[in-house]
Image 1: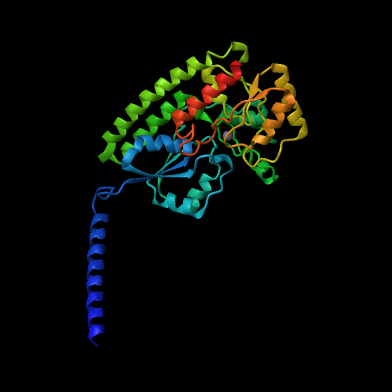
Image 2: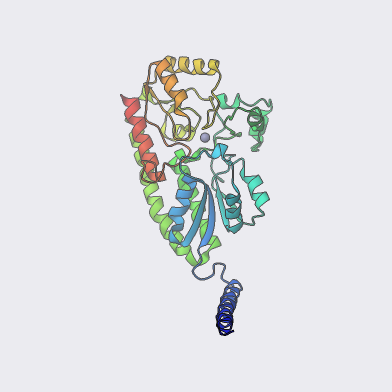
Length: 346
Ligand SMILES: [Zn+2]
C-alpha cells in the first residue's frame, strides 16, 4: 500500500507539471506575435541552390527545410510524406517556378498547407526553351502558348511514355546560371522574409546587403573570366539544356541542345546521339561536360566518339555535398566557370 501511495504521489506531480507545461504552451500560442518567443520562422525551399540563398538571407532567424537536397534532380523528384509535413509546418515556401517543380502543386494541395508561396523567378525575363527541347513537344500549338506567356504542362506525355525525359515547360527554368537573376531572387527572398517576420526584418536586410555585394562581385568576375576563352571557342555542350542563361548573359553559344537527358534518363535514340557527335565535330568545340545531376556515361561515350576532351563534372541543377567545390551557390559558380574557361581555352 505504501509503495502505491508513493507512486500515486509522484504521478500527481508529473500530471501537475504536464498541466503547467500545457498552460504555458497555450498562453504562447495565443500571443499576437506570429513567432512565439524562441521559435524560428519555418520556411521551405524546393531545391538546394534556392535553399542556399534562403539560408544565407534567413541566417539563424529561420528554420529551413529543403525538399531536393545536394545532387538531387528537381525535375524528376518524387516527394515523400515528410515533405508534406514540412509544407504544413511552413509559413513560406520558396519555389523557382517556370515548371522546374512540376510536382509542387499536387504536393501543396495534398498536404493542406496554408504557407505563402513565393515564386522567386517572378519579374525575371525568362528564356523560351531552345528549339531542340521544344522538338520534344508533340503539341503543335507551342508558339501560341509561348506568346500568351502561359506555363503549360506539355511534357506530361513524355513521362507517361516511360522515358524519364526532362519535364521542361515553355520557359527555361535554369535562371540561376545568370548571377543577375539571382540578385533579383535574393531581393524577393529578403522582402518575403521581412514581411512574414517583421521582428527580424533588420537582420534579413543586413544579410541580404552583404550577400548582394558578393553576388555583384561574382557577376563581374564571371563576365571577365568568360572573356578569357578565345571567342571562337565560347561554345558549350552539356547533357541537358541548363546553361541558356549563362550563355545569354556572358556570351556563350549552346551547341547540341535538345538531348533532354536527366538523372534517370533512358538513353536518347541512337540517331540523336549520332547527330550530337556530328554537331560537336562540325563546330569544333574542344571539350564537353557532364553534370552532377546527370548520368555521365552518355557524355563519356559522346566525347570519345567525337574525339574531344570530357571536361570536369559541373554543378548544374543542384549544389554539391557539403565540403565539395559546389557546396554553396557562390562556390558552385566559381567552380563551374573556372572549369569551363580551363577546358574551353586549351
Ligand atoms: Zn535541368
